[in-house]
Image 1 (cartoon, rainbow, N blue to C red):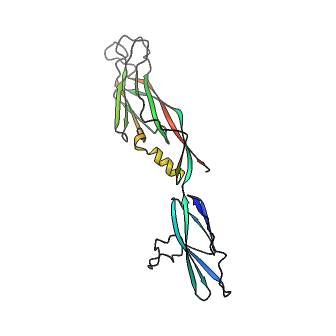
Image 2 (cartoon, helix red, strand yellow):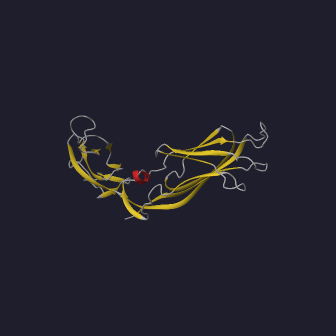
Image 3 (cartoon, one colour):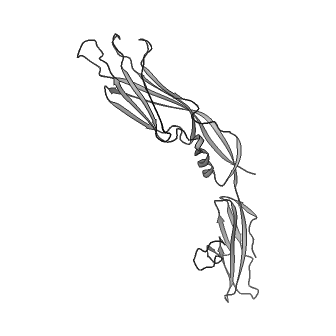
Length: 267
């Protein structure tokens, strides 16, 4: 006597109940469960007698949707047995997918002397899709009146996972402004549809699929920024005198990202 649900969702526990089984002669019975009638896990050439669980009640949780066929065997106290096949339908779960727009900002600062470099590593928008970014390197003004060349640095960004590298050199439009350099890129990835419902076996699997979309992976992984003091010119016009052989710098990076929000909905 077997009682099982018509269906369960992936990740949901199915309760298999054979407690109504009995021996017509009044003897006791033992119950064993085979959760996969298509696999012979004990290697005895009988795929229906693998004891995956014992007892009148069994619980089964499956992570993949589809139809599952198993067997339950009841044995009485004289060794007589009865095996019955059972089928369980496992259906996908429904999730609502929303891409939430957000701005992420990062900033760093430091000091470099002529010929030295500093590398910065970080992962912007982890768990999100990158859309636009802009990064600006700014140098501090020299203390003395500027009558000679301004200091200049280089800014380089390298994205190994996306095969993209770009570099710029700081410039100064006029003597009242700090030297600066900007790298920017827009529409790095397409903006996907938002606010729809999709069926999947698990939230984690759906998230991995959406974030791993080959058309939306640009910029994922570690970003490598390199700042180099390329040209720290003397800070006085006197030959051989340089009271400041480097420069203070700041790097500000701004990213527009789409954060993935997945919530399960009841159907």
